[in-house]
Image 1 (cartoon, rainbow, N blue to C red):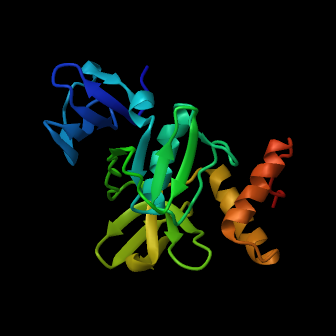
Image 2 (cartoon, rainbow, N blue to C red):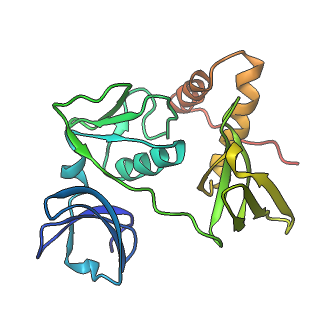
Image 3 (tube, rainbow, N blue to C red):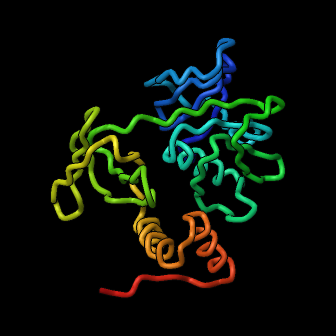
Length: 224
């Protein structure tokens, strides 16, 4: 059974797609044009071969937001790509270009290397009814809240949290992400504690937690 999303190649037309469900995908390379991001619905994806691994190798992707970067990394992790220092932990960085090496490494850079294959992967649109997390764009860049998206405009966001309460936020202050799991939310809370306590940058706090996990330690939350 296929796991979504993945990068696929059409058997009939040779187009490259970002396949997000059994019937839905985006054209990312086809007909001599690249970076389409054209939404295609009701397509039989059984005729689309999974080529994610080979397509990412020797490729570079320009990320447009933290959520875009997270989305791409999670796809890459499923195909055995990883960070040399952090494994398969999502990393947030100001450098806009991700690079994928044949030996499984992911790296990042401020510059685009023209010798690398440029890849376009769109971030599927988030819509009302989806479960999302809001990441603050400034200061700690931490997750502020998670819930069901009730309303979204150019200026406002309304979520419903797990307790049924409405949360109103200004859209300009937040990046909207796919909802974090309970484990991911706990890690965000832990980072928010460690970062100011030890006067570290967020990446340093993330590396500290990753090192503890690599040494076999498990960090759990004290029962309330």
